[in-house]
Image 1: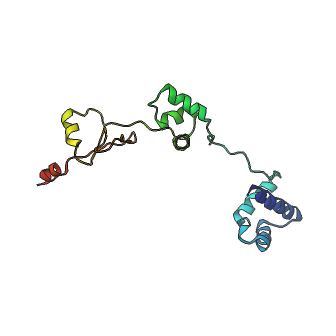
Image 2: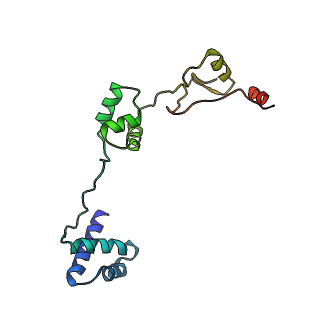
Image 3: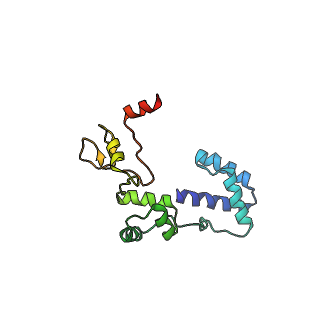
Length: 166
């Protein structure tokens, strides 16, 4: 795609130097390349750039945060503090937290199991209903329950819930 974009820009520069305007150049591009050609707004932007004296055909450097993060930096932060959130890591590395989330998925680093704070033994007992998820896992299986950090399991036995509604 990049090569085709540069090719279109060469053509636009040619038409600019011939004295054509952006609209005329875009129509000629569409006549040859059809739907693959640049839109008129893009042609106008490039003609504006040429008029300002910038004849470089490459994309300008983008500002903002870097999109790529070295995975060794992420692993080092996680190793130093296993309970770091994606937002904490993102703040330390000066990237967005979604960038960190995507990187963690590709690295296949498991999330910690979140457990609601301050569960008393009676509350745990209430949660132990057949087939209901408890902080220890899913009853009847040997698999631990994986809950995202910001989620809570708020389950009440169905019979107790119906009694409260009456």
